Amino acid sequence: MLRGKKIVLGITGSIAAYKACLIIRGLIKAGAEVQVVITPAGKEFITPITLSALTHKPVISEFFSQRDGTWNSHVDLGLWADAMLIAPCTASTLGKMANGVADNMLITTYLSMKAPVFIAPAMDLDMYAHPSTQANMERLASFGNHFIEAESGFLASGLEGKGRMAEPEHIVAALDEFFEPKDLVGKNILLTAGPTYEKIDPVRFVGNYSSGKMGFALAEECARRGADVTLVAGPVSLKSSHPRIHRVNVESAQEMYNAAVNAFPQMDAAILCAAVADFRPESVAEEKIKRVGQTMDIHLVPNPDIAAELGMMKRSNQKLVGFALETNDEEQNAQNKLEKKNFDFIVLNSLRNEGTCFKSDENQISIISHTGRKDYEKKPKNEVARDIIDELASMK
Image 1 (cartoon, helix red, strand yellow):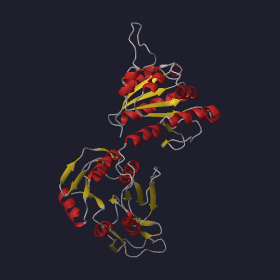
Image 2 (cartoon, one colour):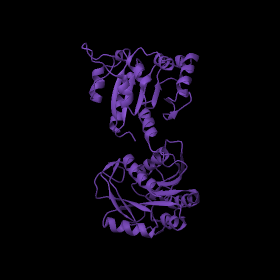
Image 3 (cartoon, one colour):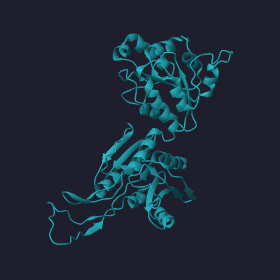
Image 4 (spheres, helix red, strand yellow):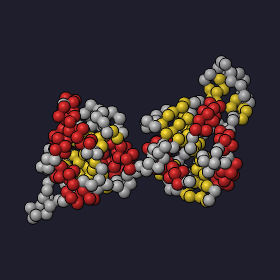
């Protein structure tokens, strides 16, 4: 949740300084405003002109910006920022921060900072492992600073990692998670995602085009906001990254039904995002079916209805969210499904919206509940996930 946030990015004299460009791009793409403060040594590795071009702000390095007495106020920066990020942060800067050695603009800004401070260390293994570096990190952690470590990419108060700076996307994700509302702490949420495959024989199946991207984005959003997530995933190539996501892999609709029905009684809410096959072949051939004749008939029988079953199971203190992908009469079909399945609200999307739905990284939805309809603009699926979970979190 970085949109509208003001971030002071401190850059120090490390070979990893060039990666600050990628951090800036990631922060700005997420909607943040970035002000760079760089040490004199940092300018040996990357030019202020490059950084200024990315942030559209003059880079601050010296106490005095001109020879006429105009000066940069580290106090004002400390009041302006929603967070300070120092990436890369060298062993030298760590030592100065830990001991209050205010000999450059970055350190004075740090000492005046009223907002949370995030540190991404960058140095060789021997420097990182040295007792003096470890003592400085321990001291800074005791001050309430947040370390972003290379191995996990998530916020850590311990001393994980090997000194190498975390990748830019992990650093941006760590800040984004910090600002994410924690309104789902203590909640258990069930999510279904992806397609189901219904076997015809050992090499063929009936399936659909679902990539699982929307469901996985919802799982990550719920986990970032504090929930423990049970993700029942059909056959997709996606990976879940958050440690609070507990993944259950399935293939068929029957397997997804069994997993969902088994998990739902322990849940506070369920979001049914999977594109579940309505029908399956009545019989599955044990060997590959050979081509014989000009036609092939497959008799299909209904799969169990996961949404209907969970709707009947739902207790008064549970929430149930469904999805409707329609090609015609969208709102009426979604409204009928809302009532029939006992959903609290339903997320409607349409194949008429080009560049959304299957395999796309974007989506355009409407949320239909018992109190009305909300329409949203086309946007990336991670932002769509935030809109959906905002709606869920607002329900009492």
